Image 1 (cartoon, rainbow, N blue to C red):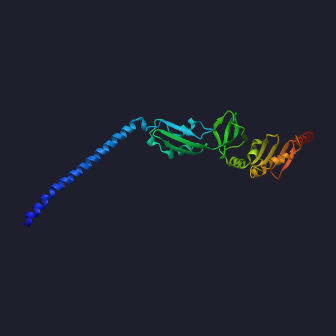
Image 2: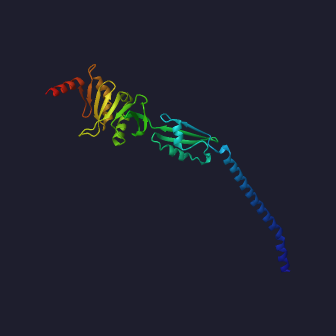
Amino acid sequence: MAKNKKVVSIESRIPELKKYRKKRLVRHLILLIGFFVLLILATLYFLSPVSKVETIYVSGNRELTEQDVRSDSGVQKGDYMIATNNKNVAEQLEKNKMIKKAVVEKSGLRAIKIRITEYKTIGYEPKDGFYYEILENGELLLERARKFPIGNRVLFFNFKNDDVLKDMVKEWKELPTSVQNAVSEIHLKPVKSDSEHILLYMNDGNQVTATIHGFADKMSYYPSISAQLNNGQKGVIDLEVGAYFESYYKKKQEKEKADSE
């Protein structure tokens, strides 16, 4: 009897096993169909124009053209949107010496927005008939030549990409705007006792000799110093040690006397 009960018990479970197997088969079939549907949809997406970059918007550029920025980004029309990594594109843009910061975003289905912040151009270095930008971070862009400078920015002479230029730019940025606007040219003229000796040509006709270290503190007093000069009196203001003025007329007399001896 016990043996018959055991056989009946197993047979009674057969329909349940069949039902379980059927459910399992249906579930696998649904997953398989779902996979192929997703594969088909993905294929259709990548084959359609919707998957590709159609427009690249650029904002924040001043010195750089929109085409410059698009070219530096590495993103082109027709690239796959899904393959465009915002962070990587921003890092690529920031390799440009003129770009301080770049922000890249995807907009809608087919547009890329690029917003940049440029380093400001504070002046130019004339070389061989061209003008090369000097940026607020002390970088001299020798690979970017202009036939004419833009705006009334100061001209630098005899500088190169090194710490001396960076020191000069750092001091320059600390000057009040009114004093910056009074300077026409800055010449680096090293002497035996001072490798950072500079000569400035002022828009009012005066000249200033100084050294780069501590230049901003001393030069900030230039308006009050020049205001104390007699009307029409022009000459050289020496700011290297204290403040000393020598008129062009006196210098001319001394030169004539030296030549006659």
